[in-house]
Length: 198
Image (cartoon, rainbow, N blue to C red; front, side):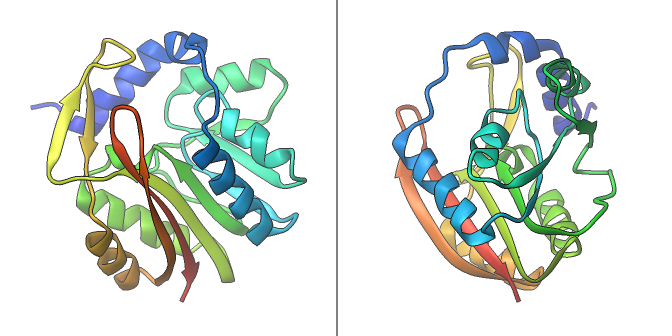
């Protein structure tokens, strides 16, 4: 049986051009969230997990931050490189996180992980930030897991989270939850999370 994460990553690999070509306007809640992260990091360095076509990185860089762009899909990495950006292929499930950063940021990425994989990534993220480090990410709010072919027409696996679950897991991985904001979206509800190194 194929791993759900492998199937999802293959879908992004195959659908990267379609994903990047979709009309995109950053919502107000996301803009506020990223601006808040930028204020907390204050001109520092960010390791971004799952940069995709680089939209969030570009927005964060507009605040004077230095963003290390990564993605598990080589197609996205090559897309960013073609636009003149430095980007690295990184499968967050298996790859090593290198360097030291002020924050690790992952927008709509960790929701594709199994719960044990999420915990593993949270621990790895803690290992690359200092004592004042930030871990910021968004996941879909809900229970259980599901598959969807929305947006790409290809299968992607999702794990849903509740606030209490996130606080518990983050606490065991060396993070103290600063805030979890519930955001109502057009097709799903989201949790915008900011945690500090504990």
